[in-house]
Length: 136
Image (cartoon, rainbow, N blue to C red; front, side, top):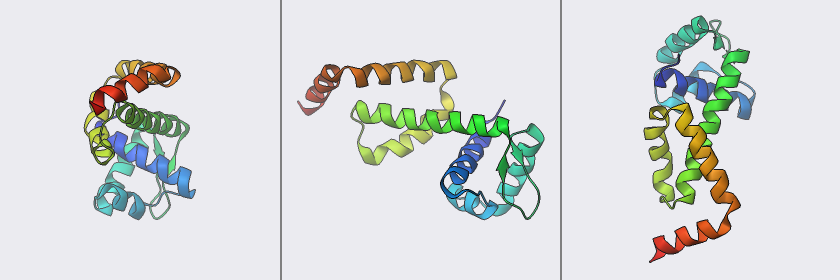
């Protein structure tokens, strides 16, 4: 089972691969505000756990397991951002709030939040009433 720290690295590697086609140790280090040596250590651990294929002086590649999990992590992050936006959390607070809660929710809770977000998006009247309450 991946730790919150492992999840952060997998998510960042996934995002880099999706946006740039490559994930380099230095870029992951910069994005996570850690030293490259920390990324190397974690990459070695993720390699042992089967999430990453790591070879020194080469970019980071996700295995099928890592790619599937990375996609799930990004979806979790996006869904929480969407949820907080819908309920009216200030935009400037959303990213830090998501970072603070995403590792503390069970996957079952995330499934229920996803159901709720989808239901709220389908029911424009509910979202309108919610916004009215916030404005009053």
